[in-house]
Structure formats: C-alpha cells, structure tokens
Length: 336
Ligand code: P6P
Image (tube, rainbow, N blue to C red):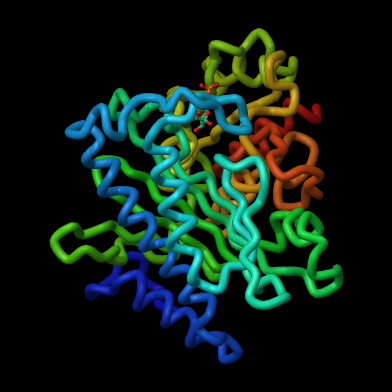
C-alpha cells in the first residue's frame, strides 16, 4: 500500500485493483473481475450522460413510468440500469439489487447462486439530468452468506453495511471521478477520455475531521425533528463560526464534496419521509463505508449506519454523514 496521497506515476484503476488483490493471497481474482465489470459499466454510462445534452429526446426526459420508489424514471436511468446489469451478468454475480427494480435479479450457475451480491443506484440524482447538474452511480458489494439456505435470497441480501466487501461511487461532474474502498482506505480515479481508463488521482483519501459546510434541504426545516431544527439554528450563530450551506440535490455530488472538503450532509426524517428519503442498502451503506474508511462517520441519529439490520430491500433511513466532529456535533443536539 502506497503511503503518499498524490500518486507519483500513472496507475490505472485496473492496476490498482490487481495490486490490492495481490495483498490478499487468498484472493482468486473473481472479485477484481467483478469490480472491473462495474467500472466498465460506469464508462459506458458516462458516455451516455455526456451525450445527453446532444441526444435530448433519445436519453433525456422521462419514460412516463415510475420506479419502485414512485419516482418518475428518466430515460438515462433505464439505460444505466440495463448497462450495469449486462456488464455484471458475466462477472460471477449471483444477485443484483437495483433502485430501479422492485425485485432482485438472481443469476444461477447450475443450481447454486453465485457468490457475489451487487446492490446499486444506477443513476442517483437523475432528476437533475435535464438541467446538467452532476449525477452519479453508487454501488455496494456483499457476498452470499454461508449460514443460510442458498435459495433464501433475502437473507443473503439483507446484511448490515458492516458486511460489505466493497463500496464506491462515480460522480459524472466536470470530470468523471470514481471512488472505491475494499476496506483498505478510499482511493479516487479520474476518467481520462484520451485513453479510456480511470487513472489514480488520490490514494488513501482522508476526510477532514471538521468542516464548515453543512448540506441539507432547508425547505423542509419546519418538519425536521426539533433537535435538527436546533442544530440548524446553532450553525447560524456567531458561536458556531462561519458555516456555509451547500446543497446540490444530488447525493453523490454532495457526498463527494463533503468527503474532500469536510462538513456534514443531512437528510433527516421529514413529515413526508418519516423514515428519511435515502435508501439504506445502496445509498447510505456504501457511502457510510467510504466515509468511515476516510475517517468520517455516518449515523441515522440513533445508531451507526453500518450497524443497521436491514428489514427490506428498498428501506429508507435518516442520514447524517461527514466529518467525524461535525457528525458528533449534530448528534450532540439529537442526543442532548
Ligand atoms: P430532495 C435525488 O433524487 C436524491 O435521491 C438524492 O440524490 C438527493 O440527495 C435527494 O434525493 C434530494 O432530495 O428532497 O432534497 O429533493
């Protein structure tokens, strides 16, 4: 494992994955093959995202259908979902869970379900597609449990976030950046279109311990829990010092900024979403894994996100995620 944060030579994501794999003698290469399937899918998706403005009717706009979340499905959502499923189909993935699909997709090899489980939000923040705001893909990787029957699919899937083997996201912004962790730190890669490869841009990313940016949709302030309303009053006081509010409305972009600059992102319970809006399995869990690997924290207000025992595939959770000191400060209002 390199110790510098700025790489001294060109390292592609594939090289990095193989190097990480070398440090695990028991690794068989299956996992690296799986990760490379995800990165291939995101390269295809980013090409579609970049062309969205040109192709308008073909990929922009809504399909007229609603997903399991009841949200209007954007055409690019459908393309991204199909792209990930087809790229993973040949990569030893046994179960795929997508935000866009009501039910999991099971891929059997003979009678047994294959080892790996991939959960993903194919295109988070898709409502921003038509106005050219950054959007992203989020993924989480689990493996089949060995203490339950092979066909007990939900038991294999509904594992707490601390069981993740890997997690990551891609933000399709001014550049396309992929961040991932396998539990050995957080590493970032920037897509170099001239060579069609992700190139290492930051290794062992550390989230600043504090940060003077809070990220929340204050339009819902009056329906937040009292403790959050008290926190939002406090950040505006002289005692708090100079906080800024930044909110893009695209979780991947808001999290990416928080990971790099520090601060805190909040999506508390609201009257319309008493359980929070963000999904546990393929939004909160992967980002919580990354946050903790970078020295940050993630909670639902009562417990660590990665300790939550999931009860349903698409369950939602309140979320406070970011710099450790900032998350602790929000908690001090919630638990005060
Ligand atoms: P609101 C996008 O639809 C999303 O799921 C996240 O990417 C984002 O953080 C959140 O919803 C924004 O929700 O209620 O503030 O518009």
